[in-house]
Length: 95
Image 1 (cartoon, rainbow, N blue to C red):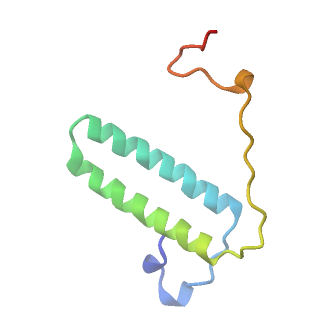
Image 2: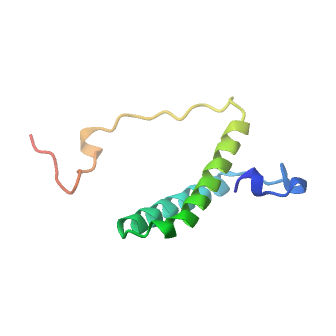
């Protein structure tokens, strides 16, 4: 939830932990799926409420990220090996 929606007396009091962040990320995933589904059905008007919630969550997560100390080590990503790469569109790559 964006800091805009938190009462002034509660700002800075929330306990931010990995569980809270993951819950918001999962919620955002579900919101994006709902928005996509409604858009595909031509029901753009119904998307607005979900887009507002998604925006609020993203702003909140960005606020947390901006307030986090920069001393945390960056997450490194490894390039996936061909054996562990999932097939695209249900088709396996052949050589």
